[in-house]
Amino acid sequence: MDALLATIPSPDRGVWHLGPLPIRAYALCIIAGIVAAIWWGERRWVARGGIKGEVTDIAVWAVPFGLVGGRLYHVITDNQKYFGPGKNPLAALEIWNGGLGIWGAIALGAVGAWIACRRRGIPLPAMADALAPGIVLAQAIGRLGNYFNQELYGGDTTLPWGLEIYRRVTPEGREDALAGIALDHTPIQVVHPTFLYELLWNVGVALLIVWADRKFRLGHGRVFALYVAGYTAGRFWIELMRTDEATLVFGTRVNVFVSAIVFFGAVAYFVIAKSRGEREDVAALRGTDGEPAAEVTEAEAVEDEGVAADTEADVAEKDKKNSPESVKPE
Image (tube, rainbow, N blue to C red; front, side, top):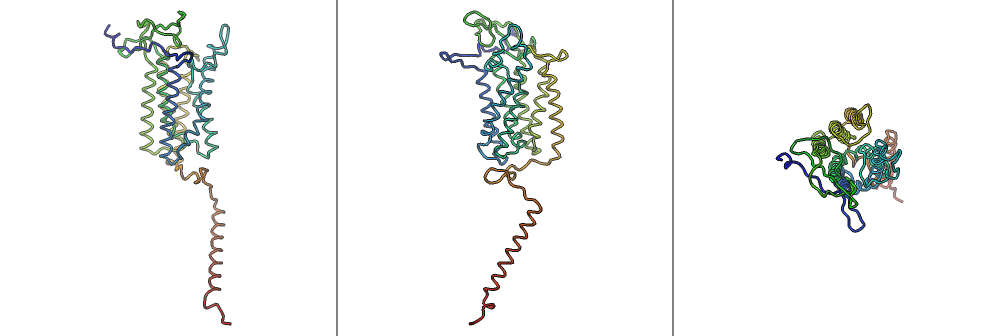
């Protein structure tokens, strides 16, 4: 009984209704995470020499791309939920019921950010470094949505921070963990809150990369690489604890392999990019009108010096002709 009293209760529902309009906690958490990432990213970008408002402009492209990418990854890796005998393929479009893969979200979101950066003349690695802490914080906030949905948890536990899982039912009496309501708050399971483990890990990664960025003046995409490496290191062991349905490869969850591959890729980039030197000066990479500053070649510099010399010679000759000594009396 003492152990039960120390456990974490789950919300009795994840969806509220304002008339016919459903208000989903999962969606609210995703939106809150996006807002936090933009706000923090904007502050960091301006501090690095960027222009206020540019992060919002980038987000207009990156967020939709990221949502599509996240959903695509989920549908591809968990295709058995949507395709096959007795399945409804149209359910793959029901993003409001949960199911976003961070790998797809970051990959396709980066494509959207790249397009936007190209349009604005912004170096993508510099923008990625500014956004990195906000992105991982947004992931932490998004994990709260899993709490309301009673999903992404681990096996049974007797630890005092175990999560209580309730049986949720619809008004028709049908069991539904997402859309149902818990009428009886007697837990049917007490499990590891792996969503909470990842939430706390993500907050720690955000603090780590901010500290490393300030201390070592990281640039050229190295802050973003450190974020990816830190996140995947945590996702690796947390994924091994989860018990929800997932696609298996050689008997192991597919995201375990993805975490390991992406981790080594991020570490390799972090090491290689060190040769590019200290953090780039964003303001120096662009002109005053927001476009990239034009690079001056050595030949152009020599030509400019020649023009300047000729101009000075012309002025000197003109002054000599107009001097009192050079004017003859009539």
